[in-house]
Image 1 (tube, rainbow, N blue to C red):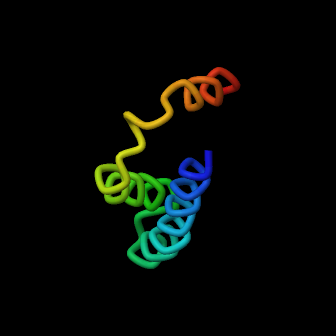
Image 2: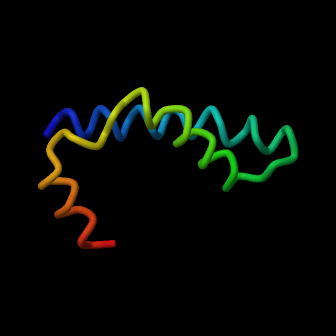
Image 3: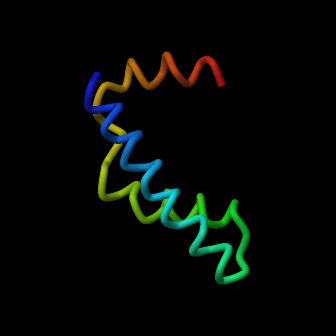
Length: 61
């Protein structure tokens, strides 16, 4: 379970860095979030670990 929190923390840190950078470049905050996810996603590899826990969270959304 701590792995999920660590991964979420890494995604949030990446978003905090990428969103202001994207706004400064005139791209908008949504593209900043997308860029952060695209860059960090393959590195962290969220898929494959604890998929049942992720599915429980996905049912809320």
